[in-house]
Amino acid sequence: MKALLDRVMTALRGDAQADRVVPPTGHTATLTLFSAAVMTFLAVFALALSLATGRLADRWSSELARTSTLRISAPAEQMEAQTRAALRVLETTQGVASARALSVEEQRALLAPWFGPDVPVETLPIPQLVEIVEDGTGYDAAGLRLRLQAEVPGAVLDDHTRWRRPLVTAASRLRLLGLVSILLIGTAMAAMITLAAQASLAANTQVIAVLRLVGARDSYITRAFVRRFTLRALSGAAVGMVLGVLAILILPPAQEEGGFLTGLGFQGWHWLWPLILPPLAGMVAFWATRTAARRRLAEIP
Image 1: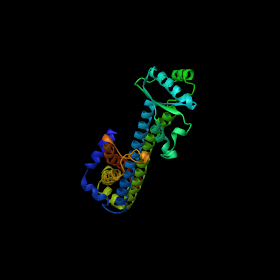
Image 2: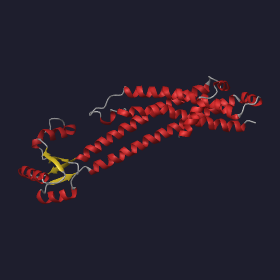
Image 3: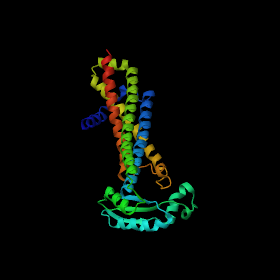
Image 4: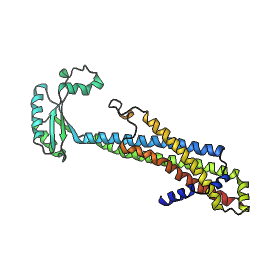
């Protein structure tokens, strides 16, 4: 990577007079600028989506990892006694920081998204829920289940393992998806810049032949094309990066009601990530143009 970056900087500091070999305007310039801008714009969104969904999954997983739920199903006349017995068991369980039975209002709020805000919780045969908060060490779920089975027959412990595992898997896969998306975007940019460079080389075949006759080496001609297309890609990528960041800024902020659909931006130092995209686009352009120029010059007699 360092060697490639050094070569890019050398190409950018090359002989500006050699740029006359490459036409400053035309469809090749437009294609290079447009493809670099569009691909960088998409890369900004790929980064933002990957980081935002990863944060969301991590937060959900972290919250579920610290809490558990105890569900007590019993006849109405036994519910209070079994709830008190379960709380006594939890108070003496190592690794449990606190435990409390949810109130009628809290259980009504949990059911409101499905049954509305006026659901008559008091008259429905629903289980009593107990919220368990772990300390830093955590508790032995298997041992706690055995104690509850013996002392509170109607209690069922849910340590959220089945919810937490898919979220952790989703977080890792979303990050991988973001990386794959950026690699595909870079590949598409390289292909477009290669086509533009090949078209420019083909259009300047006679000029290249004349330059060779007056003593210009292929390395000199290659540097001319590399410098021009690398600068074009850097310019287009910078524009695409700025537009992408501005588009991210106008998205709605994170909201609890919106869940996954809001907060799809960057946070903290993650705002620095888009800044690396233009240099990456420049390196992609350098490599693609250099390869295309060497191949094309080898074919020209």
